[in-house]
Length: 281
Image (cartoon, rainbow, N blue to C red; front, side, top):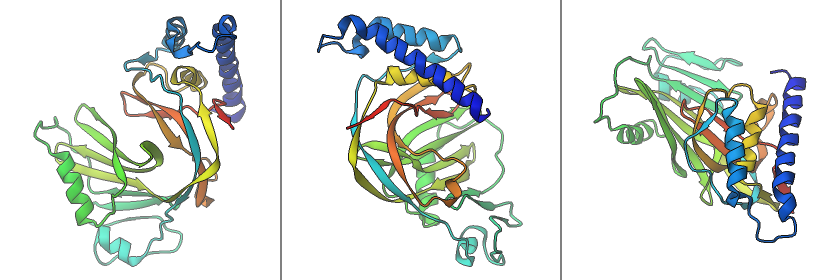
């Protein structure tokens, strides 16, 4: 989507959001007890608008409103050296300047993206139904131990299983809220883990101002600004911390992370509902 089109759609979605808020709060503007999450008509209208894009909500819409600090986050910058190459690919491979992808004769490979994302492919995915007795959590723990990867601070956020494969997403948590840019993602099939992806935040500090978010229902209207969410099913809505990874991501080592609502779809994709739904005070 080009920048101009994206912003036009965003503005339209924002106008729609404000019209809804005005129409549903006008009669109750002098009532301190009005709670938009208790307004069944508003919730129903949000669901109906999303249905026009064939977006189904198959989960509870959270009612909480959060007041949370903004986080100053610092990322681990990955330097490719001989020790790393030997650790994942074995001996005999030397690092080359400005080369960010390496492989060995076994079919294993590593790739570093934008200096922060580490992708390790162990093998090709195999076809076949997943076995009920596949102990993927045990395999994850063994993988981290064998590769000497520090998984402390990470907890399972969600898992998706589609047909003959799936993945489990682990994220770092700060005060019980997921910091989504700091993650470990394990891809698995009937034979276990076949790919691993990681991006790691090494430092988190609160900065002065706090933000008060709108409700999840209000934020869901931000989905109207995306053209790649039609015909999808929402299976989870959750509060998270998130930073936009834009074209400048490669040169960024630290950035602020803001509390935003996140939706997870049944196909494993997710959207962070970044919009003017945050008030500083």
